[in-house]
Length: 554
Image 1 (spheres, one colour):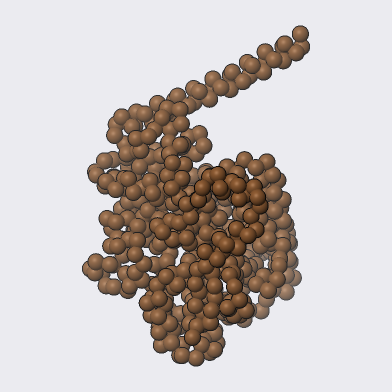
Image 2 (image 1 turned 180 degrees about the vertical axis):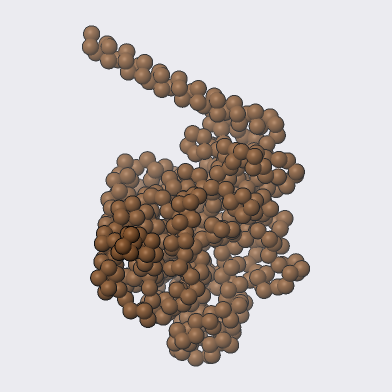
């Protein structure tokens, strides 16, 4: 009897859950179906049962298995040239999204209206950053923290870090020298170690020397990002994933909190760094916190507030992740563009000779003494911008609101209420309506005068977003990439070595892996004919870590 009662109760519970879910599904799909009948732009392969959930895999099967999720979205965007926006019904796996790659519409979203970030922007990166941060905050919270952290990324503050960045880039060059003519290396690994050294120094004033050894913090970050995916079911449904991410997240949180409290104690005890020393982001933020937290007797607090510790730890985790991840991937893609476009490489080298002299051994000291020389490298800056145009490191999301109507290219009005507005940068940056020869690498488009056909269109370039919420770390990222290219472009020739990499990997395959490959056949391994595509690893790193050969330039 008890067994029968339990079974009946279980059946009733399951039936109730299924019934409720079916009702939610019907209500949601009914709304989407009504919009479909009204002619709202969306892919015709929509179903009451799955919406558009089966659509992305259809496009993804024509791309490499490790391709970033933004690449099938870009492929899909090519079918909506007449509207430059379309609806994607991915419920219940993801909120219904309005994909927009119309520059004029995006200027309303991010600049005129400055729409808020949706809750999903936190869910997407929470295992990595821990909680709310500048990317996910809205309203007054965002303003308070942006103002608190801005000084650490100002030009004056970053210029004080130039000597360290130059020294770190010099170590990067030394490591490439050691690898010259020795075999295939992963350039992305070397770039990642460089950028982690830099972001640790700038944010926490920690010199971990990761380029010459190991360290627990970047190892934990690397583990979390390897176990992080937006659509790879092998990772998403692995039962170990939550435990591994929690454990490594705890390592990161503990380390950052320890450094935060150490720096606070030094400042309270008047043992902070001297005025001539470059101050980290966290030191400047703590100074502002101590000033704003004085009591009625103008006494500074002797202990950090727990809420402040929690949020500032999230902010630092964000900087460590984004400041390392996206910058390192861009450095790798810059070297790939140098390899693919020897004319551009020669122009860059000529510019560096002109600005710094032909003796490359004195370049590092010249940058340290005169950081303003970086701004004279106009072709190098154009080269970086063009690389970021073709390989933007992230997408951008906002939440639609009532009364905020976007006008599609064909004149149709689209109400954004209830939708996440997703800017797929790859689709914006290669929109053939606004960009001349959008798939071609043309650094000169950033050097021509307004009115020239190549001149970049307004609001169509947004690798760091546009408007008040532009990436706070953009100046640091651009400075770091410039310094690396100036120190390395004349010294090294980097050549992609994917074919050799394939042979190396094949030799280490198990019998099971070889059988699987024999049964399934050859995989798609290129995007637009290029092996160095943006992969799903966090900051859209180049596939396979960009295997290459390094040679000393003659």
